[in-house]
Length: 243
Image (tube, rainbow, N blue to C red; front, side):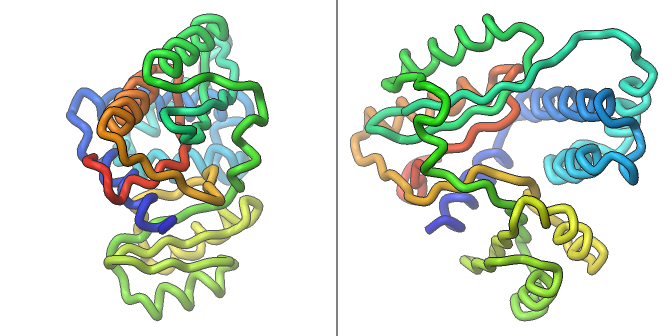
């Protein structure tokens, strides 16, 4: 179930319009710039930068864009100071939602988050209200590969779980081992549809009412469309939803 739901999320992102893809590029650029300012422009010495570059590539951000952002960020002495915040809340019918943001205006972002949750049948909660229903895991998705060879390579690299469903392979590892596992599989020639440390739900919630499905879809659209939002995690089982 976890793999199926996760794959629906990936397909949803792949079907974005050009304008929405441009917004993803902008968000990835902001994340790269922040980690460059905090840890320097050399991925060999800045492990967070190395991870974000891999995430950007999985989101189809061109190499020249990545290089340009790193060069610009490494030369900046001022610029906007971005703050990282995590918001937690419930969508329609108790769907658990976690939103990661990078913002230069906390009040604006907090107001936006509250507005979205309230408008679409949910409510923004306190820190910790839903995060106990998730575990932090490294998640790497490979679309097409020889299952046995990939499983062997993943387990040798340090993966703790391997889920195969419909030709999609979902590889899980501990967050501390994420870079090691990704680098080993990349060196072995594998490409990723997605590769990042995620909030993985321990249980999933299905929505059956059409109105709830519409509201949840709209809530996710509004969150993902917000420039300050870097990632949205939830436990909605979308396998039966129209996405």
